[in-house]
Image (cartoon, rainbow, N blue to C red; front, side, top):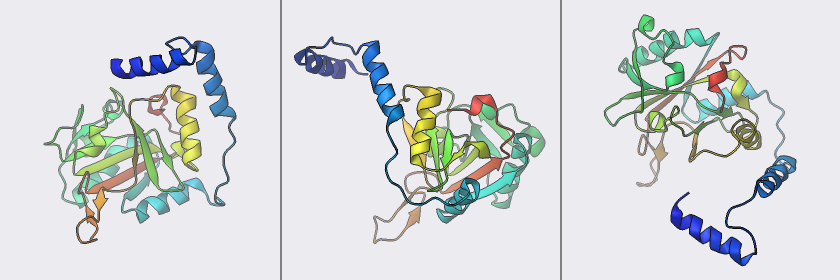
Length: 226
């Protein structure tokens, strides 16, 4: 929090007769209120989350491949890149750097993406089945640039991380992370705009392509949690 914002909030709390900084009891009261808040009415969801997510993601122009295990991911990514004539070099989130990319013919560097990178490989905190959306959280080991800068974004996700709706996604983040990170990003297919003559153009403000590789539920690594 910036010092200017801290001063403003401190003055507001002073007028309310409260200490400048929230107490532990105040934080706990807010957390309890969030956890006990009932979910508002929502549309019927009589679908299976995995199938729904794949359907919705493809409807948003993402491509999706399902594989049996995390170890099978590099070969799947290589197939996708080669089929599109795309580069076999990528910036990659550190949590996936230990996979056998070399055997698949891909060279990865575990770092933030740069403007010169054409392919970025990331994970995701979770996926929202209702909308076909990926949720990512910013952090030192989960740089947002990997999914925003390169022309091609490849996302790796366990099927166990697919939740039904936005409500479940936020509950998952709060349960696993507590305080929210600096940025939460929602990725619903490739970047697009229709600002010019109402013609949809892909890649205007981000990746031209989003490819999602889902690996089987039972192969969930602990480090891929939010």
